[in-house]
Amino acid sequence: MLATPGTLPPAAQDTRWAYETKQDGQRVLVHLPGDGSVVLRARSGEDITGAYPELLSLARELGDTPAILDGEVLALDEQGRADFQLLQNRMGLAGSPALAARRAADTPVHLVLFDVPYLDRPLLALPYTHRRAELERLGLHGPYWSTPAALTGHGAEALRATREHGLEGLVCKRLDSVYEPGVRSRAWIKIRNLRSEDVLVGGWVPGKGRLSGLPGAVLVGQRAEGRLRYVGNVGTGWSEAERAELAVLLRAAGTDRCPFDPVPPVADAHWVVPRLVGEVRYSTRTRAGMLRQPSWLRLRPDLAPEESAADFPRS
Image (cartoon, rainbow, N blue to C red; front, side):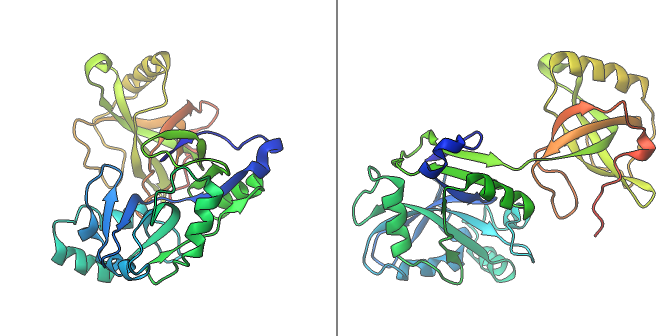
């Protein structure tokens, strides 16, 4: 069951919803047949059990009771927050057990559980509150897995707390919602905490197909310690008119010299003098300071290049 992007439920309906922290990891269904084995399946249905050997001992937690658990595999940073870049080092290793075991020793994962669509019998038709009670009754709290609490009501406070703690967002779940496999349901609403910052445009790459002759993406950076550091490419967020306007400005600012230090390994890059300031929206940063899932908001002609984009994180 998948959540639909949206906003908080109306205040008058707040008590009809539960609120869970939105996690930045890999969604999994954990199949426990009750015979001491465990199978982890990704959203695609792929068997990814071999990638996470530290989760195999979960099979012992329920004994011979067959179950299917819904959750998210996370890799946590030093502050205990989900770090998708860390998790990427663990993903895709289902067919390499030796490498997966070495990575598990260096970067163990943590499985966050939030639903149980099957427990000795199908629970799909039961409301969220009943399924949640069944899940919590299992008491699944171990070295590599946990069942974080869900909050009923107080959605605005819950969302504010995720923002204050730098978490990815919030998932709102209607208390009477049944479990609908494969459905992106309005009974589950996800709210992603997006950040926005000013950046300097230092280059662009040409678009393809209908965007031929126009910028497919702009290459952006932020100043740090006297140099312009590359923080990523932005290829979404423009209307056709805005993209055409930007193309004119980029061509006028063209240069043969890359303004970024160090030079990013971007194929077919066209460099520009970094005098265009833009505002972008993004979800999080990687440990190297790169913007994740950036999209263009607007040009900032009100800001001079020298007074903007000075936000590159220091290590």
